[in-house]
Image (tube, helix red, strand yellow):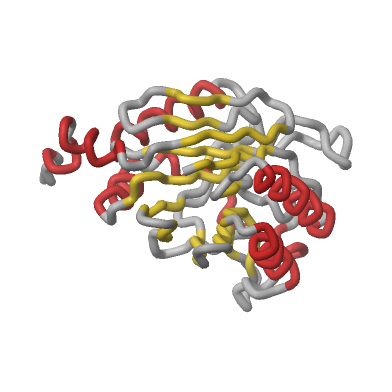
Amino acid sequence: MRIALAQFAASTEPADNLARVRWLAADAAAQDAELVVFPEAAMCSFARARADAAEPFDGPWATGVRQTAADLGVTIVAGMFTTTGDDRVRNTLLVTGAAEARYDKVHLFDALGYAESAQIEPGTEAGAFTLGTHIIGLATCYDIRFPGLFTHLARLGADLVVVPTSWAPGPGKLHQWRTLATARAMDSTAFIVGVDQSLSPSSEGSRRPTGVGHSIVVDPTGEVLLELGDADELALVDLDLDLVADVRERLPVLRHARRLG
């Protein structure tokens, strides 16, 4: 499967970000990508109040992404904020194209002096979709710190887990990102494709960045196949997802895991 990693720094204007999604997806499609993965909050940067930007899952931003996927013949995964009918919104992954799905972020980043739950309502269910003959799991940013989600997705049959991210910078954060992506690949014996917002300055100029870049691809044995830098970048990688079954046969950690206590 040819997968495009579309690393960019979202602005606070959904219309501008939709234009970026269209441009990057067209570039990926021209290079024969089957799946194009965008960061968390691709619709609107965390620099803006989430409720100000949130739309229904069938609203204009999602509709624009769906039309882009249909026009280009690709499947897109992109982060957005969806309305709930309450004060808080959902941090949602939109999947559209050859498959249609959604995932609402389950684990909220209430840590290091930040409270995502003040504006976001958590999801309650794991998310996955089928593309061709393969199941692809869905996770978002802080989810990567929770191995149980990834082993759960693997037991559902996921050969690959995509992890759109807005990984804010800070002491040790880049090291943690690399380590966690590698560990989750090894926990689940699945490919991991993590796509972060870049560190590149956006139209807000000096605002605090909402990503460190370094989008990453890790194979089921923990080998890093690709890591980007910190700037905007579109990169493509060809993954043989059929290799997952062989790795799981040779290294059956999912079968060996025991429930204790």
